Length: 103
Image (tube, rainbow, N blue to C red; front, side, top):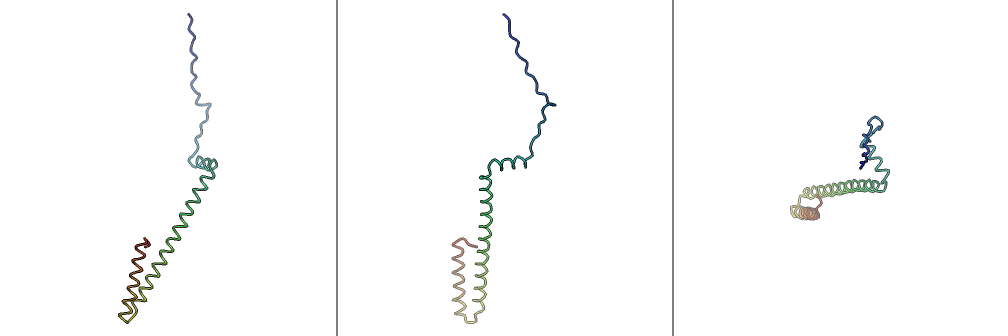
């Protein structure tokens, strides 16, 4: 009974293979080329979030400025009854802004 000799596994030759690893940036660029719709949607979402933040900040800043102006005008009245009525309107507006979550 003759046994067959097992073929020897050849060790990989390190010098023959030139293994070049890609940098993280190159991998990212390759992924963007493979999935342009996905990365386009991500970019659009980020831009929309930035625009929404800018609009929100502008609107809240203008409402606060308007409220401050209304308070200053009410405080300048010399008639105590008129001043109290106008300050009450300012206070109601503050309560409304707080209940809606606006700063």
